[in-house]
Figure: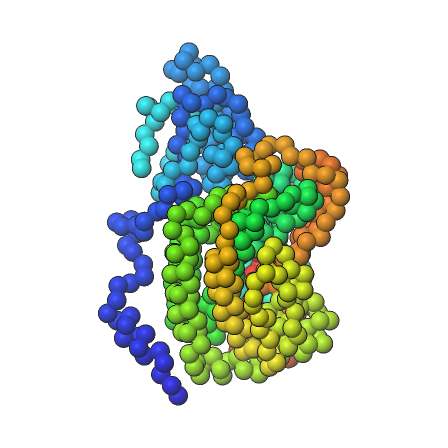
Length: 129
Length: 374
């Protein structure tokens, strides 16, 4: 019987583990990762293409909430992250680059109100990146 | 459907459920009738993972279906992206740019390597070799890192190979990184090839499938090649740029689980060869046809029907698509290679086997319940 695995075994004894301690450290996320959406209400022209292309119908065009309704009278995308499959078609189709997918993948939550993102102007929105 | 369990007429006879909620079976169940240690009959029980892709695809446009086609098989999403994209390209008569064709081949082959690594991993854990499983999933992550960099998602590329080409070009330095990862895969193959007496004892002479039976039961891909028939869609009906690339089709004559396991290793070597050649010849230029440069909500598919078949990691993957001139396909039939591997072939092989050999036979077929149930 040959013991070809032994060199590998000794190498593994003195090398770092393949995994990282996730919540404390993370592997580097490359550019172009499809994570949470960053939505810019100033750029949005309310064309509704993102809602039409969305394969999971996660985007719905709704009116802005009362405090912004005077400034933003049209309909804007409301994103349901629970339905979203992070395909990035909304990003690709947007003619004004108003929706972009960011590198933030840390979206697990116990609070279901965090899952649905109503349209909000950027200054008010807290993007934890 | 499984019937109610019947009372056993003899003391030595009983029913045994292998799956579907068992970690060793993966979302798929087999009902075994056992006499002592011998399986007297096996009945596959599909449907646990049914999601109804064929119907879902009738309600979506091709660009949305490209995203959906990832999910047909979790372990090789890019291969299924490719089949779907080719079907739409052929129906619409789109000229795919040269660079996109090469990128498609590179990504499909990387996906095949990754899928074969999982095959090795699950085959190892099925036969009680836990280290193999850990090793396989560790090395697979190198390829997932590549996918993350190129497509933006680790497991699901979200229709990276879409009708008209591919959705993004390679980022800077991708070729170098791919070559580095291929070196790592070479390491993995060396580890897989190490002499493993436990695996020899578990797999040699187990689950023998003769060529005649394999053809009769509809086996394709690695299972049929493990039975000794030289067949590969990439050679017989070359798609994309496979006719320009130099590679061999591994065949083994032992016909047992061990032969199929070795076919997986040989195929990984050939895939590495293909990716290296394709990276060398990779031309410059556009990566997507002008018609699909920006995703469009309404794209009319011309009337017609098409049957496209590809060599996926598990065998022959095919899509039959009918269009009646609307923007959504009228019918989209998906032929998953594992439907035939997991029902007729598996039932045939399990009959007369020992209970202890069931996992070895089951995992040696390179199964994926996702593409069987669709």
